[in-house]
Image 1 (tube, helix red, strand yellow):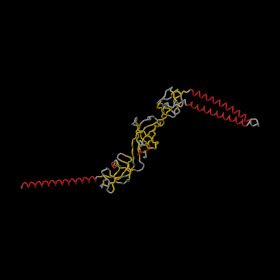
Image 2: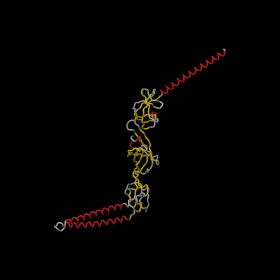
Image 3: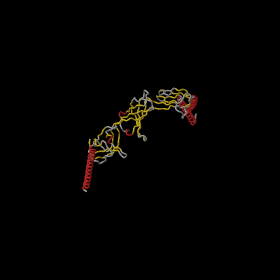
Image 4: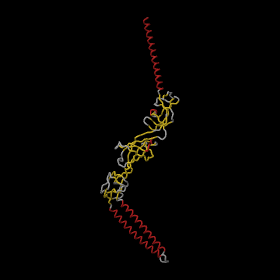
Length: 368
């Protein structure tokens, strides 16, 4: 019995020791967790919000277009007698590009000229008769007033017919000038659709030539909506093309469309690119570097200070050691910096690395 009793005492003592060891371990673990949590709270870094100039450089795709583009057509029907230009030809304003053969025009013009002569003869005859009657009417009883008025009206009608025939002849003579197809401006022929002997002049026919003025090119760039109200530095962009990637050219901004396109949420900006040497080709794609400056001062923060969730975007402000969530709208993203707008002001204390886990109303110890 004694041995058995000692045995039970030993077991009881052992259990008591184990429980004591477990309690000490739990207390030590609790102490470590509390210390870790305290260390975590103490290590939260913050910064003082300040206003600064927001600058952003981006590269956008653009398209080079001819400054002017025209489809040169024949204004009258006929056959191409001669071509004086071909694809790739450099032409000047007023230069003859083609001659049209339409013999019936000359025949009809001769007919109109003869009608002019006949109308002129009738007019002179009726005018001469009226002049003689007018002189005779000064003697009483020689010419009746009604007869004189009738002759006068006939003279006026012949005069109007003569003037109308002259105008018709001049108008058709102008049509004869269309036998020569001329260039409306200087440029380069980019397409030719006819050969000598082709019948031209139908409204549904392809144009004889396509002419482009490429001395100056238009560069169109779709600028995202966020940048449309910003200042473009120096009012210029820097472009490179796929054909000449090592050459950078300055392009001057000359006009904006003034409308945001719904599909792309962008505004079309148009630049002018000098191309006197003809090295750039209309229709080419270009990469355009644009540098923007926000007018006035903006609030900028590290990108890690902005928390983005499905419901909101916010930063965490610290007031009297307590956290507050402040909703913001974002502007320029400048790599490691982010432009923000919200109910904030310079001098506010914000958490440098904000997360959803740091709830509003949490008491923290800050570290600048």
